[in-house]
Structures are given as C-alpha cells and as structure tokens.
Image (cartoon, rainbow over all chains, first blue to last red; front, side):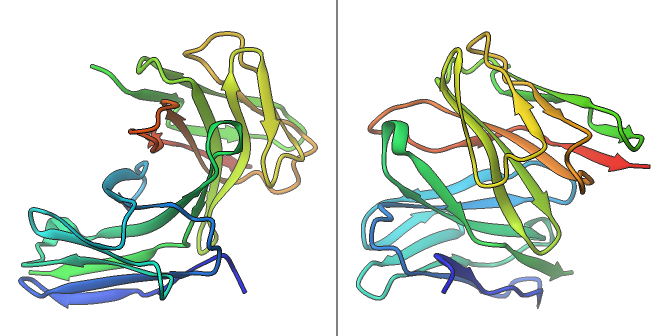
Length: 113
Length: 114
C-alpha cells in the first residue's frame, strides 16, 4: 500500500458545481496536511495548510482532515473555469533534518463554463 | 519580489551531455529541494539541502548531482548517467520554522532529451 493515495481523476464538472478532491494515507506519522494547485506547465502553489482534524475554510475552499480515518479532502464551492488545474495533496512527517513531504499523484480537474 | 526562480524554462539536451538547472531563492529559506515530475507519477524527491555546504540524496538521486555553496542557490546537474532525464524539474524551498513549515515551489524547468 502506498503511503498516500489520491483519486486519480480526471474530474470534469460544470461551472458552479461543488468539487470534492480526496486523499487517503497509511502513515500515522503524518502531522501536517497540504493542498497544492498546479496549473499546466507551472510549479505547484500552496492552497491550503492544516494540521488538526476538522475543517479549515478559505473563501471557496475548505480543507477537511479526519485523522482517525486517515482521510483528507478539499472542497471547492461554486467552482470556476479558473479552478481547472491539477490538485496535489501533500503530507508532512518529521521535522528539522527529518522533515519530509510525501505527495499524492494529483487529480486533474476541469471546470467547464 | 520575493520568490523562487528557475532557469531556463525549457532545456534541450543531447544524449551524453551534462546539463545544469538553476534554482535561486530570495526568501531567506534554509532548506531547498529538487523534485522530478513525470506524468502520472507525482513528485519524486531527487536531492535536498538543509544548510549551506550540506545536502542529502532523495529517493531518486542516481544520475544527478547538486551543490549548495550559497544559501540562495541550489543548482542541479543532470548527468549522462541519468538514463531517462526527460521530465519536469521543480525546485522548492522551506523556512525551517515550527509555525510555517511548508514548501514553496519555483516555476519549473522542462528538460527534453533529443
């Protein structure tokens, strides 16, 4: 079993839809959870960052973490064509010299106008 | 503007050549990282450096080399020993902090072997 599993997609939705992107993980050492957005041929940009179970909201984006189930989600409300991108989940373990980020393989999202 | 820059944006290499990818950051971050991204494979760690003049191998270091002579610079050399170098290369940096512990990425370099 891979440490981080991400729904591969691709996902295609109409504009205005609610989008749910998901990752599961197996390593209990993961402490912090991140979502990156990557537009085609660009570097990933940090979208959301959270470390506790529960929800964290930022505008149209909500990051949800369930540590007991080892499951994280990113919800996008009122999706826009500009949200079309690949979304990567990432999970941090360790700190200092032992710091490591483990990434999911990404989900390609297309929002159709 | 603060950030991470990578150059060139596109790079073409002939078989048997070594090429060097540049990564510079002016964020005063301590740690820097190199990843390789292939379609359907996600991000794979090549090398990382926590401090100047020190670096460690990541998961796929074979065929690559790095140096960290300055805090702001972390160049990656793709050697002729790397059998399948065509990929998108991403540099990232991180400030070693208890409260802000995330990586920030550069725009990437796409390397193609001719």
